[in-house]
Length: 331
Image 1: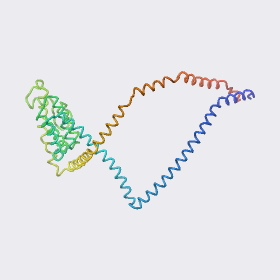
Image 2: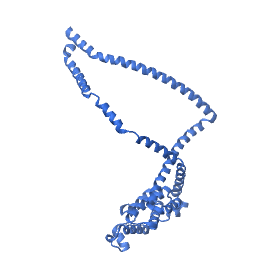
Image 3: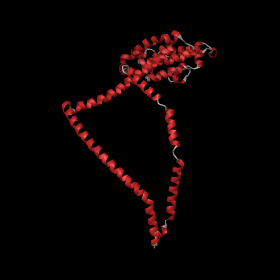
Image 4: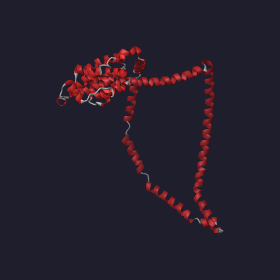
């Protein structure tokens, strides 16, 4: 049986140890009561808002009907989605136009005019036509091809992407990637379509020594071989347009996208001004000044004092536990 002294000592020690906890609990209770009061007030305001809202909704629904209310909500969500898509498309067109202008220089207008007709002839959106021609043009330009040749070759291979997509039932972006790979010297992607543009095939087809050619000549021979090997696919989009559901759906979808892009372009100037203002505001922030003040604040904190207090508290708890005579309590 535990002695009276041992038990009293233990409970006295426990009482001393838990006194700070009781004080914290009292403060916590006050804070909790305050939060509950504020929450109850907020809840009453929310219920009042809900009642008013329901009354207004009931009036609206009774006058226009539940079906039209749901339709309005769906239409609103759809409008937001369409507006975002329209602005994104318009922005993409603006960005790709910069690439066209830089790549083709004074011949950029030829690409611009051709891109407007690419949908009906090859199933390419204006965005795709400009993206494909500028990408291929930049690649070939770096090899030394320039002028009218650069424009013609870029247009022909971009058109081929649309025809290949129709002929081989491919995604148009996939067809373009195969063509881009072939013109840059990668042979595997086009092999899947039966077009082998290996060096051996090119040397045999044109009776040339590949190693003696310049970069521009190599690009030209790849182009010539590709156009010759893809004769069956060329013109397939226009040839099958009347009987191809896939091609018709592509034109419908692309036409809608181009309409959205045109509408989205109306918002671009205003959005650019807003973005510019936000950028200036962000750039005006003196980060170094903020960092310096933060460093001063952090350096003023006595971390050693905090650490020592934590350690002392831990040591006190451990010491307290060690002093408890558990055998006396439970025997």
